[in-house]
Image (cartoon, rainbow, N blue to C red; front, side):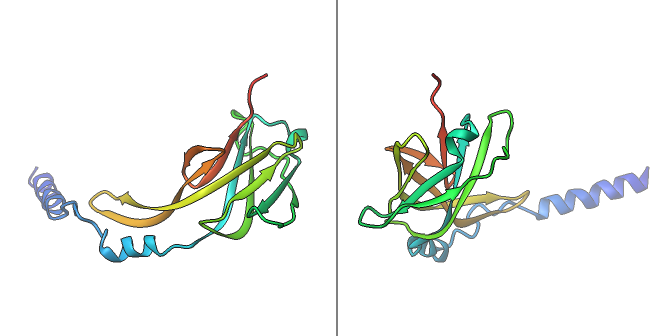
Length: 156
């Protein structure tokens, strides 16, 4: 019984000494780092409910000028069978001011733009740290969070 009480006492002291840090490490340095981000290192695409035949290739161009379209093969394997989700990663350094145009076999051109880094909290059991994450973009006029392009095939 005394052994159990001593363990409980030591555990209580440990929990009391680990107070959450309300301010975390959100220091001005992290916020300044976030404001200084000028590029993203690649862009992830998720396609939900698209049959592979409609998206076996994706054509992409960065910028709106005379850049040429590049074709990329996409993986046939689904990463999530419930949503029939397929994943493609465009490995390229992209300026946050660029617009990424892409199209599938149906020929409709989509635009991803206004890439933003946000200062975001990362909470642990007793601390909150902040980091600068690529987290927001616009796809065809709609804001998307998570730093990925997520397309849903319209139901016919």
